[in-house]
View (cartoon, rainbow, N blue to C red):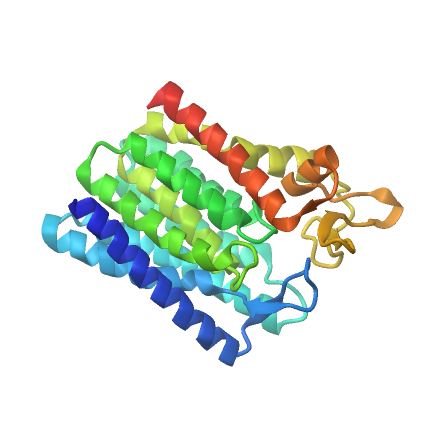
Length: 314
């Protein structure tokens, strides 16, 4: 019962926080175009709003458990989210996107520090730091349509709970899942907000940091299986099959075209050199679909994969 109340409380605080953050970003013109709908502009970095429910839920848990690891986890997630927020602002106000190195260096340092404190052995410090940075990156790149990244993050965060017998770790997983669900409520099709890098990096670092907190290296290895769709998306579709000399960030070419019947399909890339991703692979397999249908298919793939991991390894 207490866990259900905790989840509901954090979820409700998250809804209020996302709504207020969206209003502030609209007022400050921190907005981005929905490149499928083209004329729709939305608050572009509302993932930062999840820090309020996470901190309030975390502080409540801290006073009831005195688990200092809660605070260090919250600082890790906050740092990643702020790095993402700064990246969102640079992408908004500058003519060129924020450089990869400007995010990679602070993320690497934060991952190393966190891993140093919670690694079960000195030889695991660097691998676990790479794990944190890598999972955060996966959540940041497995994205592109309304609800895609937020829904995938929520599914994985829920599945992870099956591997968390420690009550504190389980409670951290609950407040993370509740916060993500609050954002998903606004980000699902038709989206009213975008999570931005502040949201995707928060989700990724939150999940990876929680796994590192358990100091269970076998769980870190097993949890990589949750990310099979992300691995296919990044290494196979975006790196192996796409035109490396083209526009892998999809910043200059709108990646999907909106048909007259409101279905979407793969954009007409110059010389047919498609910049592949997971959504375009599904469109190639199933033909034109509504945007919400593509996101739903991605959620189904992530959910089935997560269920398989839980079934075979939990």
